[in-house]
Length: 207
Image: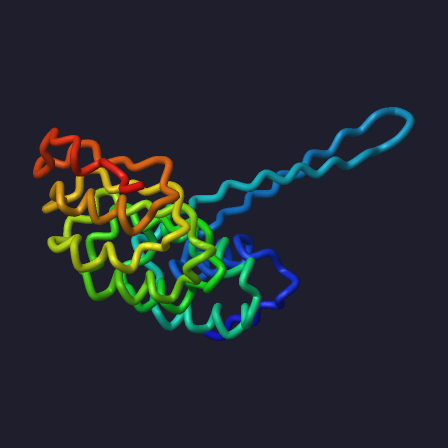
């Protein structure tokens, strides 16, 4: 099946249509006609009620995404919205799809619960972001990241908000590394990181 997607259609509407068609979502329409007769006139009233059954797919095929990308072209705003929607609803299961959708000017990147990402994949994604644009990074609950010291050097220096809660193998040294790498950070969420201690020296910023 070939999808034709006009660029004028809003991104999320496009995605919704693709999801419905690619998952074979069924829509049942029932039409009821009622006729009322009086002494002066005869009128016919038609009532249409539609019941839709929609299920969110666990993932969307890379072929479908490639087709969408060819239609979005260089529309960075639409791509950002599409990436945000798919990550929020956990529709992506491959780092290659993120790399296809990500734009250099993205300001907020939510990779929470992306267990399919390893260190090398995250580095490629961060390198695809323009350093002075990325302001918020959420990598909470990324269970497949075991060496944060390898990733942190690729964090944006201009980043303001970082969420690494429930991260495995995040150490005090990593916190010091973040503070040094990201001097403008104003919020760092490291809650439920069992490998951290309470040593405050790692949170000190060198003047």
